[in-house]
Image 1 (cartoon, rainbow, N blue to C red):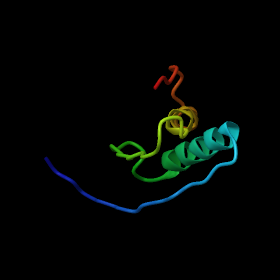
Image 2: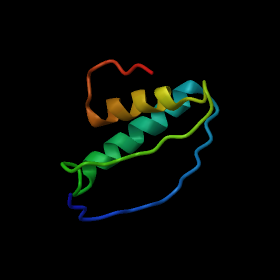
Image 3: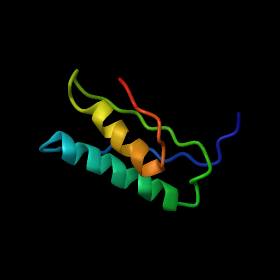
Length: 73
């Protein structure tokens, strides 16, 4: 296995609504596509309580990445 670049950073996000959470994910997805690493694997670790918005965030992320499939938890 080869890893060309590792970037570790913890980011805490606070959202006030599910729509805001989804929008944050969508923005991140679009930004990922703009990077030079858009065609490489990217690993994200999401942590949060049950019902904390992880799936909602991923739905937005998928939309931002252009993924059409429905995202389920």
